[in-house]
Amino acid sequence: IAGESGSGGAVMTPKLYATGPASGTYNSNGNQIIAYAASGGGGGGGTSRDPGNPSANNPSGRAGAGGFGVVGIFTSDITPPFSQPYAVGGPGSAGSNAHGNSATDGSAGGATSIANLFSLNGGNGGNRTNTTQGANPGNPGTIGSGTLIAQQTVINANNHELNSISQIGNPADFTTRREGFLLSANAFATGGVGAEQSPGEVASQSGKKGALLVFDNGS
Image 1 (cartoon, rainbow, N blue to C red):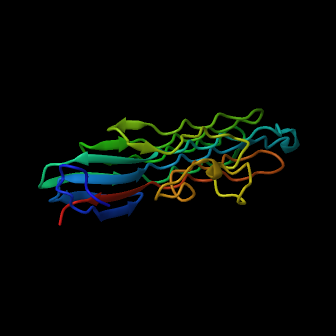
Image 2: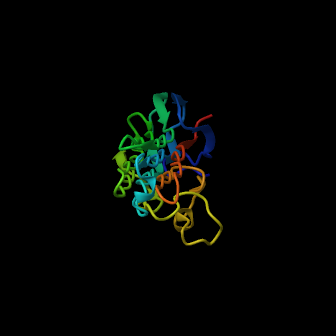
């Protein structure tokens, strides 16, 4: 990857790659970076079942799916010697199933960031169900700071469609509707599926982890 005008035409080479959860310090003696970044996807919510009358559960009572994380590309000039902490978001945990109304929500995916450059917030966890109705999916992640030069389409999670890898071409597979660049939409930032009450207790899924790949023109 060639550097932009003003960077001396130096070649951009990979200096850091990490998947979440991870943290550390990014150091560079270059003056320009390009970062491919993804925040973590939210976990799906858990579902509740009526212990006294399991057959009475609402068949449409799927728990909320986890919200998708943000995937995008960031570039910036930096002043050497550059040294800032970075973080890579982990996946949001799946909510637990339980009898009665004791199921739990999924948790949010973690943020991915390089301090003083950019921050991408993870997708929110899906809501739990009660014994009579379904629940809302988690909101997608947001850009906390910085400006992306390109970003994958942000998809709102849907409780009735798969948020994870499915058969190629299956319209229920959300990943077929996300364009990819370098960081696969199948492997990173996807929200987890919410649990389902009927026909049986189907466990929820955790979200997909975040990732960070940084190029710079330093030595």
